[in-house]
Length: 300
Image 1 (cartoon, rainbow, N blue to C red):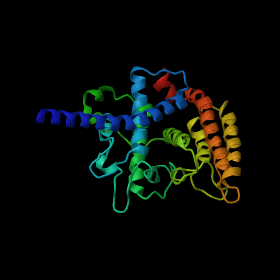
Image 2 (cartoon, rainbow, N blue to C red):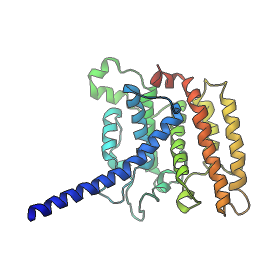
Image 3 (cartoon, one colour):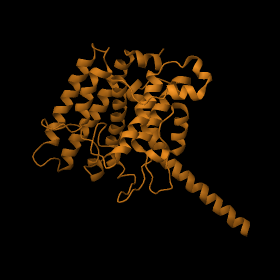
Image 4 (cartoon, helix red, strand yellow):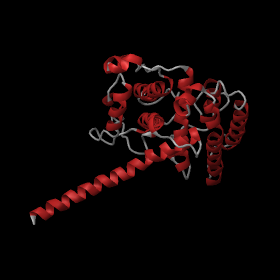
């Protein structure tokens, strides 16, 4: 009887763990698939080293934007961080970048957005130092995977290679690519929204007031185009024009008198976000292919 009880407990424990994993994993998997489509289009298949490069970037984005713990011992995504750290070599530990309850802050699947979803360049996050390090997870990974140089003979001396090639600063093009990855992720969260809820309003808006310097998705995408797509001059103007048209539509809804107050207004605003996702999927892969850093990493 005792053995039967122990077996039941073990099975129940395994089921709980399975449900937890089944709930958590598809969310990153959905973001990963979304990112892949926005960067490569729907028909591009990644294999071998190319897939490893992409997955490292996708994991870094997930850690940067979505990592949180509901208590001080949960330590979600610690294994992902450690695996990435072995490859990239961060100058900080998981404890320093883990988003967990601190003082009055209570983090859960909804409220974690306040700490990481207000914009790549947002400066008023409740935990500013944490966001600064969080960004380095992504910039260091992209810098290594897409802009890094061959370690040459240093590959035979792992600790030296790690010291030399783990620089967390990246050039303007690297930074712009990270910003693009960030906003693709945020637009994925837009897709999940059904109403103008409090959780939705924690996301960075699509557009900003003309006299405001606050972050906004479309405005920042327009700003990063000349930095990221420097060799895509034939397609960039067309891409920017499409962004500008969506921007004007979104402004009419978001900045109408009283703001978004009805479901119909929200639906119009939501459609702007979905059209923005479509434009990125249609235009960005082709422009990225024209850039040496992206071609060498994923097409060469």
